[in-house]
Image 1 (cartoon, rainbow, N blue to C red):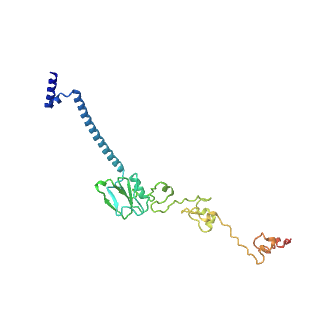
Image 2 (cartoon, rainbow, N blue to C red):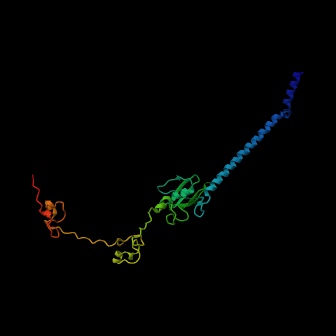
Image 3 (cartoon, rainbow, N blue to C red):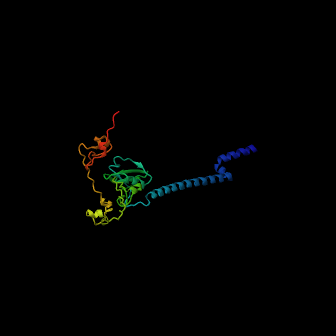
Length: 268
């Protein structure tokens, strides 16, 4: 009886699979439901992470262009024909400003192009502006400076501001410091030597060009005329006057020095 009943039950399950599913244990159904919920939650989490990454990338790109002077820096434009200056190469810069400053520090640079991957190219005035393809619409280009040329309009970079040099033309424009005023001030009339030579108006010590004139030092002592040396009277011709220069026997004023008559040292 037991074996027959067992066999009939197996046959009935094979013949009616719906019945077998309907008799699925409750715990199994709960486990399957939880697994389904887990799969749905995992899919939603992946989708959320993807959206966050996309949003972060967009904010990052927006941050790059935040605050740029649109009248100076152009987005979606690049320079080519040629795409770089002779003697330069592509560099990787951390920001648009760094690429622009590289152009400003390169003699002859007229424009820069900054690529989305950080690539920086500098070009001269012979290059032409081009519209970038859609996939490169984040390209940025512009001149070596915005809002006035540094060194001309009062804007200088770093150490160049300290020495006052024009970093773009290569010429030094070091500021000339005015010398301190003379002992009697700066006016010409306060210095008798300046008045004596006919300069009595304006400033002399220093003048308006920051140059101190020679008359500010007072009258120069008169030049002493060198006395002529009489032939045969040179001191070097007389052993006793060997350490004296000029004329000795006689001197230029006609005086005969005592060293002229000094006895010769006897030879031993």
